[in-house]
Amino acid sequence: MSALNLSVVVPAHNESGNLPDLIAEIITALNGRTDYEIVIVDDCSSDATPQVLADLQTRLPQLRVLRHLKNAGQSAALRNGVRHARGAWIATLDGDAQNVPADIPRLWDEMQRRGNPNLKLIQGWRTTRRDTGLKRMSSKIANGVRSRMLRDATPDSGCGIRLVEREALLNVPNFNHMHRFIPALIRQAGWDVDTLPVSHRPRGAGSSHYGLWNRLWVGIVDLFGVAWLGRRSRPTTVQEQPRP
Image (cartoon, rainbow, N blue to C red; front, side, top):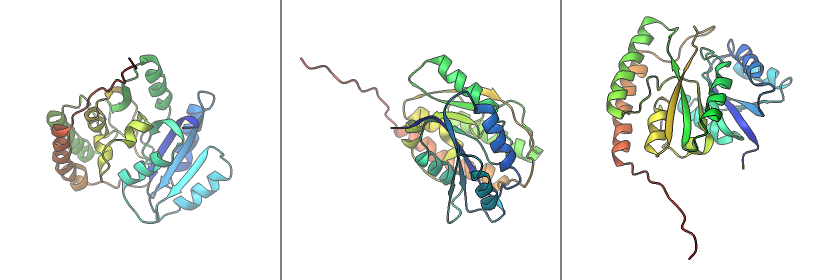
């Protein structure tokens, strides 16, 4: 059984320049609101990320650090962070600090307000993107194609900030790049999904790990696999019957 209400899971690769401020913002956003932990998954960084995180751990009891011994990608880092998390609910953020931690309480409050036991995911929606023109263009194309094929009712499936039930996320198919399709996978499992507008800002330090190829074309290839899964999904409600 989970010991906490919320775990904030952050996959990170070579983000030493962004993590200290990002973690400080998470703490500011969540202190006094609910019991929580921060789980950073270092995807075998080659910069100073391990040293930065080790230093932060000496001062922050709510910070946990997992490290991949070999680079495995964002989806694997996210999955392993969720597997090791102790929270019943998972808030995710990208390690580049373009997501704004102050949006986590908004997602949390919205989930509590809904009171819908079938609602397992509130996905962030970057209504104003602070990215390069190339990134905006490739994301717009991918989101449009994905929305038409999967009908996932999510305008921004690739947004890194979301609130999702841990158990539900661990029960969807696991594959490389699955983090781009979490709303569709949750819906295919029979759960409800909703979106909430969130803030977005330019990257503070470092450089993006995604280019046109792995942002657009690889995503479209994966899209056909997720559509295949959707056509074969048969979600249903199970109801235990009382003894006669």
